[in-house]
Length: 279
Ligand code: P6P
Image 1 (tube, rainbow, N blue to C red):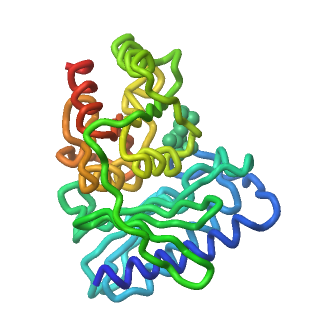
Image 2: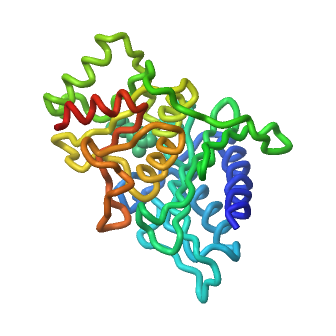
């Protein structure tokens, strides 16, 4: 059942990767449900994912960052709802930095406890895809086919520090936490693209990505259903942890489909330091 969904996402990813290689992108005079100004490629990537997934028997509906509401099939026979951010990182795609698509596969209901698989596509020098179910599988597209390139696992402690959010709006305890990691020699790696920034931590075996509550965004910026929960699932399956500062992210309930959550993804050692700082 999930194989058909993963294959459909792989097919969509190849189309989107080709689109990204075309000439420049244009901003539309439209905004998505979160208020982000849309690029033409945001809308096109959303259409590709929507059309490809809604054809599948196993799909009950889709929930996109680019759509106001959940789109359900009429008389669905399927049980899965795929929540996705079709193209995350529009704000950096015009500077030719890597961007990605993020997805979560939910069984019947859109909440963290019904998330049964998740993953992302990264559009970089290579087209790659991560799929987490029991393990975290790494695929590379070689121009003809998607080939498995092993699994990703996190060590207990890493060296990468990816601190998101506007620093002048960080809390004092967050500033002290982030500074303490740099004083220990952690390397700053932050592009402003959630997918490449988290992919780097997974590929380098560990560290901390944080998008904390800030004075201007007390609920963080990243969206629960199509960004935070999928990566929380991936990081836990890779042997790490994912919290909101205190609570396990996958234990949290949400009220609205575009709700954001503060989030910390990382190796166990770094997450234990976040818990101490946020106690
Ligand atoms: P900031 C991209 O716009 C995005 O939604 C994520 O991909 C990224 O992690 C975050 O915003 C970056 O936000 O406020 O650090 O620029």
